[in-house]
Length: 263
Image (cartoon, rainbow, N blue to C red; front, side, top):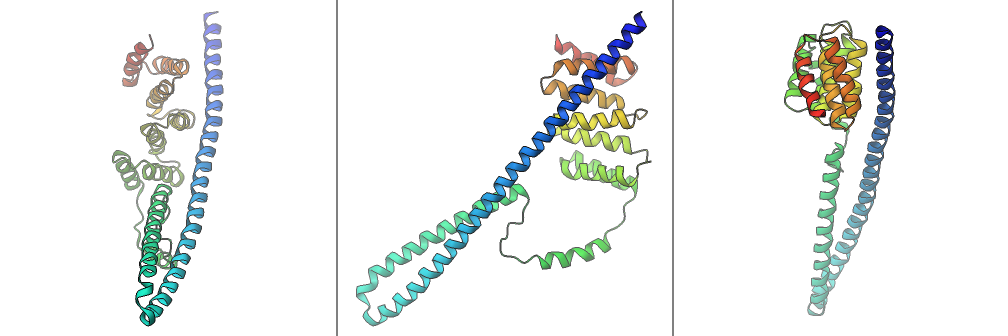
């Protein structure tokens, strides 16, 4: 009877975790969609600002043309046009200040979106320069790729770290590094405090590499992530599972200590 109860509790826990993970995946999809919408709105704003920028540039050119005409007539009739000339110079100065301000705004937004800040440079030069770089690029070994990705993670370059670890998983799926690489992908999200995404990535370690040495750490960090988003029920469930399955691990000791914070 105790065995049946234990099995029922285990199935109930797994079912609860499955429902929670599905909910998290849905929330993540919504989060990604919201980010994409925000980025699209920013791009639309950039497009509008660029249109305004072009209009301002055209207006400045028109004003400069008129100013040249005015200067010509001033040479003919000089003094009556001095005040007009001064006003037009002031207008041009103000327009140029607005133009500079708009350019600075565009640069700030483009830096946020990782878009090239120079609006007028041709792209052909960068395309021609990239090809020889690819030819000269040294082919890295599996260990070198792992070391570089881990270095990027330690230095806080989380995006580069994730890309590096993901490349290892794709290129060397049978490697002894893959479970570690998958764990560090989750850890990169955890360090960015994107806990929902971290939970899903840690789950890949648990499901895809159940015999790997990173399963206890994945359970521990998954429990921490649930705790950090305020889901103490799932956090407690996962930490207890860790304690039960890996009673001799260092992570078990940390889990016991963490559970005391729930009281």
